[in-house]
Length: 196
Image (cartoon, rainbow, N blue to C red; front, side, top):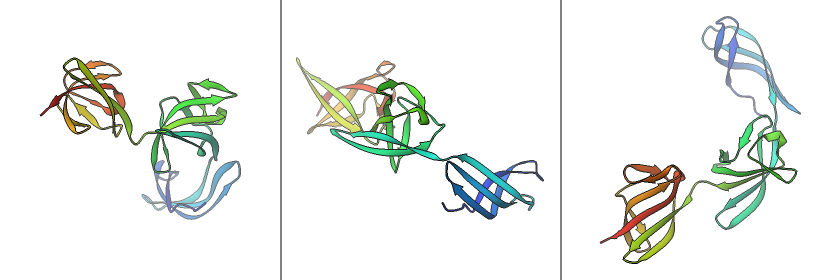
């Protein structure tokens, strides 16, 4: 592992946590990540011994879904971190959302990383939004895709196949919304009408 150029440490001279330049240090990484060396405080210039130790990340099997595709892989996480259903994580450069935690074949709603056998998750960069449009006695339904933090506002125009649809109501996790906006990740269904 490459030694960082600077880190925050407690300075015995300033008596507070300050940014330190690493003068000389050595990493070891068996069961714990350990940094041992010498650093200089950027505020007062005091040079002193530093030691940093934390548990190394562990690899946990990950079942990752994206639309109709599912792949088995692994994710590295700190052993003492707490996980729960619905938690969003970074996996490489993608956001994923935990859908299930498993230990000994049982589902858990919350657990420490070290206590989990498998993490089930879905890619969370684009999520499906269900849209229903009433036209006379008929109702048409379709899924569109949006970023989790994209906002849908009452009155917005959205593309529905080759048509444009005005958003009339939004059913969110909190209930029906008839004015204002809702983030895509909180939407259960969007209701709209065709516009010319």
